[in-house]
Image (cartoon, rainbow, N blue to C red; front, top):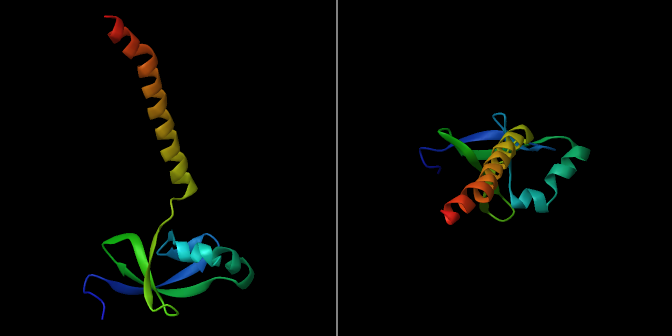
Length: 109
């Protein structure tokens, strides 16, 4: 029986990850078993997932072979990663500038 706050849905294993409601997920088992490579040869396949409709940052699937529930977490799309990377670079450049230009002045004075 599934807890009331969780629901069951169908995701699709694709070459870009486990796609559920337009969000891509991954986990170590899928990577170790090379799902995202295999799917390029076999085509997408469905997978039943358990999810919290109020929080789609993670979903779960049941590994029937091991009788275990497996956590899947979101994959950050490259476009979002690039934005995040740019912000980090700006932050580190500002910090570097601060260390090189502001801290030496404070130490002298």
